[in-house]
Length: 478
Image (tube, rainbow, N blue to C red; front, side):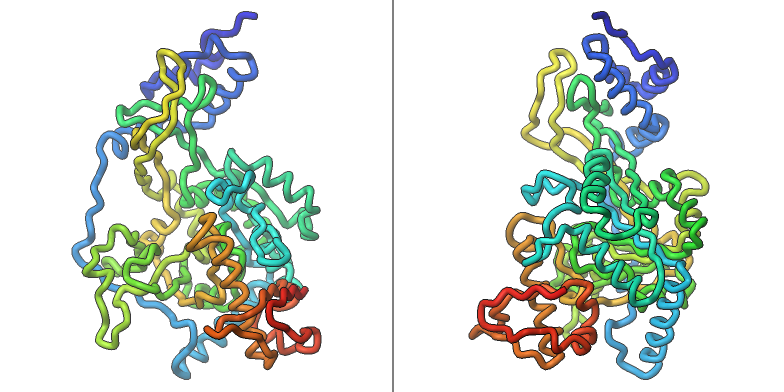
């Protein structure tokens, strides 16, 4: 059967040719109709004017990172108020956040475009079994937390889930198969972020097969573009949502919506606000919240010179200690502004090893070193564009148990340890005896579902439901 030698869409051919990328169709005539349609769809989804600009400005003219001349540590609100004025502010902020929740003005938004490849998991990362005993998937952890907040505050919280082309169908199917974890389907909206082609150092788009470009998601900053392109922002306007609680998919104990944080953000009329953790050490792999020309900015740990990363205050604390953990509250109107005149965030280059096919032979090449540029955007690049921005300190044990690696730091094992230590601390504060090893660590594994407790004080009300905990016990309470 003869197949078309070029796409039957002249506009596609012209756009690709104008971008200098006609080699994408080198193998077109040999493809089946199905594979031709697949490649056509990929090509049609790419903004070729943008790609041409990025090749010129990002791929062929790499700009070195220039450290600003004057950098100061960004101020932040402490986790625990230390004076009466701050205590009063936090009380007002918590009430304000609860009011916004009850009025339906808050949406939860998770960035979940990745696969569980680094974890050895054959599916979307959000489907990974993350809790130590119940093995609840990450998505279930988020839904149960949201539902617990809804029950507590007599409200409905819409939940927006950003996927990517590589996991969208599997993510939607997973929710369907699990009956949306008892959340109303009408509360959920799934949509994908854009994919961008990998570009060789010569400025040419790489093919991963004769019928497919080598594509990758456009970074977590692309979530702010996807909110606009998908219609999610329009859906939020329809629902009356004014604030978006943004988080990433790899943290099973994240506070998907936090009334205190939301309230602080709203009381300060902030466009975009952030949670921070005090860094454990100077070069911990967290972005650094800094103040540059009066604007909050995140400087990556790899870009902050060691003399600044290790600088200390007179009392011994790190001077630059506010670490970014990608937790934000963003006003809907600010996201609309970022998209009003073309997407406002810059693109960054990442040099990667990208397998690709030889354009003459069609054989697969596995490069021994970086051979291409992947371009991505970072959500924190929106911070210096905000008129107002506040930072609030959160507690590492209370809200940060990331699962990124199969073993070691930020792994399922380290997350299970954090979850147990957090839950044991809550039980201990309620007067419940916790068996401990000689080194003081809990000699038990404890999992508390969101329906049982989302704050330490919840345990006090359910004291009688906690059985005696014996050494080596595994206790799962719902």
